[in-house]
Image 1 (cartoon, one colour):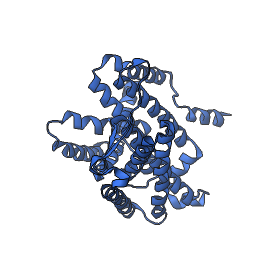
Image 2: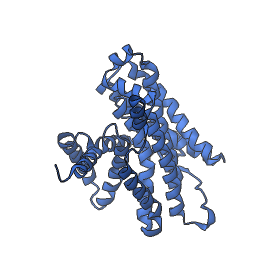
Image 3: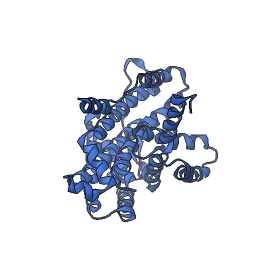
Image 4: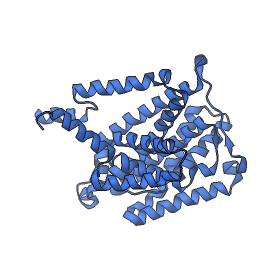
Length: 326
């Protein structure tokens, strides 16, 4: 009976009463933010919501399954331009967004096949090649990318005369919340435990009955699906798509967000997304400093805090929970 109760407790999203209090306070602040913050702050937080979806997908692949990928920019481009073309054809946005994730997920499965034989840097090189190849295809194909003019996307019309920035904020906040809850459920399920087993020791996982082929490909598919959704939502927010938005640096940005936010952490994915969006804003007048800050922060994280920003946050919580006896 105790085992059953402990397992049920482990599956709970929020276990402690005090945690419910501060999580509720954070959600309340996010709900009220558009009514008190300047419009540009609302816009930046909206982009963080969108990026957090893609970073969660990347973390499921890298942090939970242990499969390194530098091809996320390719999946971003596939999802974004799939959405863009369907949007121009008049397909309703829910179907277009889902199709964006689905198309990226299909390509994720295809790219995931090398992971059945390759590991570490070899897999990273293969996925990097995929991302660069997708970029070159879109750059050189006017039919796919719209050429030099790019691809225009019809934005959603806010209801009830709501300001566009406020509507986009709540729209993307709701979608990001859904995907965050989905991520927690995936990780708590048998699927998530299989991912973690593969990351820790794939040979032992296979001996215990985990189908390596199925779950490695499934991890790539889920990660790519998340990234495709991110691409579609970003196109819907911006209202414009062109290939130079999906260079190799986008893959690096998502990778940096995972490492700095914290491997194998949904909360860390959100923190990492906030980091890679806020740093360029803070150094907007010194853009050449952004890669320096990213690189330096990664070094500091790997040396002093391997669990990333989320690891530091957990240590702070433990400190204050046990204060003043520690």
